[in-house]
Length: 566
Image (cartoon, rainbow, N blue to C red; front, side):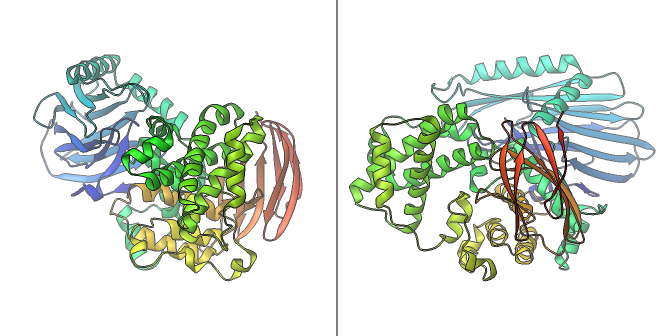
């Protein structure tokens, strides 16, 4: 993503981050300003890091450009002052939690840096009482460049321990980390950051035909004229993944959609649930948030369940997912006992999902006991909703709720697309709704509407993550247990390729299409192999896969090759 002018406001700045701290880069010529934030401390923003740039020679500014490389996560600014080329890089290392800024100028660069308040250290206390601190260090690299490093630390000591309440200790920790990283030099820091990025930002490719080399402003001008370039869609797909990896938005939002193609995160959700103390019933009664607690827990449980559905792992199911799901089911049973039934069909749908998860997980884990018996009894008594519960079901993303009745495949579920006040908070849910109904044209129209409402730099927080999930669902779905390829391909994407998409059951899909028709699909089997049902345009094939093999199918879903993956 690149621009030919600096950002004038936060909506034009570009997001970067380490997972611990995120920043908006404005890219001004005379100074780089990073607006820092951290979701865990509930302080928005934390403050600013300002790096003033002093070029060796003066003159007019020419050939300005700033860009965000979505693969590496590196923010770059290039320009000339007179005859002197200047380059700045912002690099984020997810492993050390350090942000680095390198300023290079031909003939030698000079820079000064400060945090909000004018110093090199900054401490504060978050809304939840947890202290935090930042520290910066400058280092002359000796190659015409100066580097600035920033480290961020909080007093958080894990979900089951009270936070460290000493801000000075956070300052000392941040100072120790930043001085250590600065002493290693820029080359080692940058190489380590790229290695950490590759571990988090999985190798997923998406390309629609020939890429258009346009600035974001030029892309948006075409969107305003009613044209959504496929290249822009591909950029938005990867921008959502970038936002989730850098934690430019709270990762708890990742549970709002079915993430066919995203690296999935659940640690922050587990921490959130583990912080609940006492029995579910007792805590809910005391704080008066029974229904809110139930709905929140049910959504979290469903997200964890879906995470394990995409990447099956029996150990994780038993140690991470099972305790959360059972805990939520106990709360749901107690709520039903006291109220003699769900208040509306949406709560009933959530409880049905959680109770079904408990029953299915108990079969996999061989678990039994009074809790499971109680859940089975309540599941039998829950009313079955007469139809999919519209937008709620689209957001929840489970296999049961995502089944679209055959009659709705042609008469698209209008009830799933919000209107009026609902539209303002719906994010990319309308795109997902049309994609799950198999209507690629209306999904694309809804996609264009969401894009038109994004800020100038295209980052809108959670909506970016939802857009990525929705675009993935236009290309691949697996809600019913079958793997359906190109279920909602619009005519605006006549050719393209995608690789690394993940379907339920641990199946990885690569595919190529041209003239709006599938050319071939590569199915990467899970470690234990097994049967996979593949669907495309009404045709279904049962593919018997071999462990650790990749199976190549043609447009008729006929296997033409199979080879062991390296």
